[in-house]
Each structure stands twice: as structure tokens, then as C-alpha cells.
Length: 526
Image (cartoon, rainbow, N blue to C red; front, top):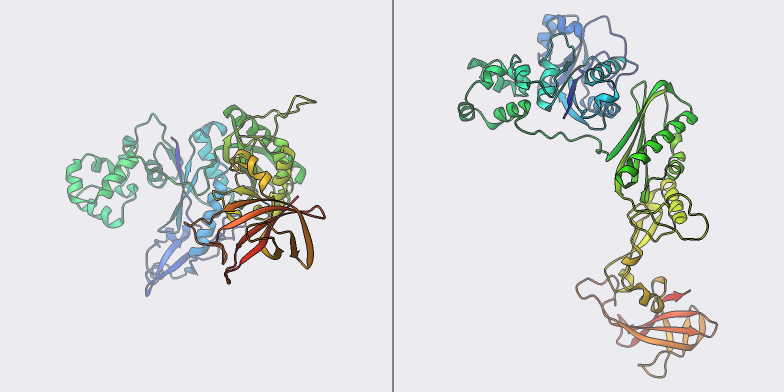
């Protein structure tokens, strides 16, 4: 596992939203201050203020006593957090697994990058670190970085590894204990009070701390000390949660020259789609959700996400879904990297359409075979253009009550298998496909209460019944609360044919307000 930690201190003289367009340094040393109760403390200081002896955590009055000519600005934690999130998104150009390490004293922000298997894309791990630092410098950040097999070792080496700030690369075969031994105990991410207690005991270096028997440390200090030591040395796993969803499969394209034209962006996307399709084909998978990210030279990241109702790996189909949204990508001063990630994948099963005519390419089918591929492709385009919640399909639900037997789901959701509808071969002949929103009462004339009606009065029309079938008795679901008044009554359904050829689905049920029997029209047969 490769873990890189970057430590880019927030530059007080730079624009707080992420780097590009950094303001020029003022004439006086600059500090950012934050209110802590009734005190105003130095939150961050630029290089000139640090050189004068101003350090983060110092009160503003003491800082002005050290350097009377300080320029003071108020710190904005919300703006800093927003800039840090933008920087995390930007770092995903080097690896899709990026985590926000949060703000630290002194206005610094830490970012974790899991670069396992990414070094060869940049010419090696050391080249990757140098390119990362150079790109951050172009954005206006002064950063330190280190790469190690554990997050704790990378964090320590990035902050304390080299006084000159040169990137530190610890290989998998190197001993992390030897590299961390000369570093101060604060490199283990300990609280300042705990580091001070260790210093009073003469334990100022990690090597000195590691030589002490564990039982003595566990007896005197809390479990955090040993846990941090074990995490840094690789004895204990330390999970790092990426800020962005970890993609199942991803492909990347680094551009020799920045691009900005829509045709060039579409061409780069087509290249990535073809590469991703080959990876998915080798794995026997199809994608249901793709994320396209475009990285600008000025630090901004544009992202477009599209989805499909079933797993597919057809580049032409995905390109049709993306093409309607590529206009949302702002190239700014140019894009120098593109990434395409499959956020959701499923097993892909190719289905043969038939024996007649040309079979063509592998159909847009998957494990949910049984849908018309052309219709499914149209549904995907409409859902991505109009929004997934505005295009829906009906799926079966475990209920024999007509109003509950189907549920509306977004088209982007997993489509139901055709065989999932319970006993549809028998029900289609007895139940209509079109149900009214709620049963409509009708006046019916029947020879006896147990017979079907011979004449109906519905929607201001007198209708003669020429044929009737039934009844089909449907009892309420006693374990569920009724949706409408009177839904807890037993219903007897008839299929009736009118003199004009129309066929209705009639229900006979007691009235919710009176004891007599009432008739309702609940559906219309096509």
C-alpha cells in the first residue's frame, strides 16, 4: 500500500478559495487571527511573520510586541474548509482515493492520497511526489509531501522528515522504524500536552519511545499513544475514508497540452470510454453509473455524472448520455487531465436478440434481460436529460390488493425482472393494465344482490351490460392499515363488457358510510 500525505500550509497572502489568482504579498508581514473566547490568537502567519518570531497560537498582542508592523486579517474557517474541499477534489487527478485530513494549528491542512498502483502512471513514486508539489506550487500553495507504506508514517515524514521540505519517499522494503526514529514524538499525531509529558520523561524522539517496554507506556499513558505508534510502524491498520466515492474501475488521460474546445473534450471522453469498456469486458461487468472529471490548469475540477437503468459497457450509448451534459464543463484556462470512473458496476450478461437478420454488436442487455434494448436506451437518455425522478417505471410489490400491487420507481433504479411479477400470465387475463386513481362509484341495476349488474350509470351515461365474468373475491390485507376509507371491506370483482364494446373492471363492496352494497369502476381493459 502506498500512502502519500501532503501538508500544504494555508498562505495568508493567497486567495483562500484554493490558489489560482493568489494575491501579491503586502508590504508588511501578514497574519490571520481567530477569536478564542476573549482572546485573539494568531491562526496562521506568512513566511516573513514567521521569520520575525511570530508563531501560530500566539496572542495578537504578543505578536504585535514582536513585530509592530503586522498586517492583520480575520480568519474564515468556513472559507478555509471550502478551499480544502476544492483541493481534495483537485488531488483526485493523481489518485481517486483522496481523504481530507482536516485543518491543523497554524492554518495548515493535511490531505491523504492512497497512491497504491498509481506511481507507474507518472514514472515512479518519486516523480509522482515531485509533480504533485510542482502542481501545488503552480496553484500558489507551499506544501510538503511524503510517501510511505502507512498513513501515520507518511504524515510524520511530510511534517518532520526533511527540514528543507524536500519530498520523502519511503519504499515498501524500507524499515519505517529506522526512518521515524530521529523524528520528535509530536510526529505521532499526539496532543501537545502528551508530547510535553513524554519530553519531561526524556522521551523526545520516536526511537527513544519505541525502546521503552510497552507495559510501562500502557500503564502510564492512555491507549492513544501505543495505537499511534503501532499505526505509524505498520503493526496496526489505519483506515482512511476517501472524501469521494471509491470507484470500482477508473481510467485516466493526461494531456500534453491544455484543451478547451468542446470537440477536444468529447474526443478525450470517447478515448476514455473505449478504455473503460475494455476493462469492464475483461472483468465481465457492465456499468450503471459513470463519473467524468475534467481538471483545469487553474485548479478547478468539473464533474459530470450519468446513469443507466441496467448495466452496459457500450461506449456509443454512454457517449449519447454524456453529450447532452458536456456543455456544463467549464474549461477555464484549459484542461490538462481527464478521468472517467465507474461508480456502480454489475455482472453483464450478453443476450442474443434472435436468429433472423444481423445480430449486430452485443446488445444493451444485462442480468435483467427481457426489456427492449432500444426502449431502455431511450429511457436512459430521458432520465439523464430530464432527471431520474421525472422518468419512472412501475415495479411489482408484494401485495394482492390492487392499489398496492405496483409501485412507481425512478427509471435510473434497478429495473424489475419480467418474471418478478407474481403469476402475471394468469392475472393479465383477469385484471386490467389501467387502474383508475381511485375507484369511481356507479349506479348499478342487478337482478339480485348476488348477480352482476345488467345496466350501469357512470359518468352521466347509461350503459348496458351484455356480458359479465366473475366474481373474483379479494380480501383486505388485515396486517396493513387501509389507504382509503372503506378499503378494509371485502371486494367482489367482475369483468363486464358494455354494448359499445368497452370492458370494465367492476367492484362490489359495502359502502363506507351506509350498510347497502355499492358498485365501483376500478379499471378499464384495453
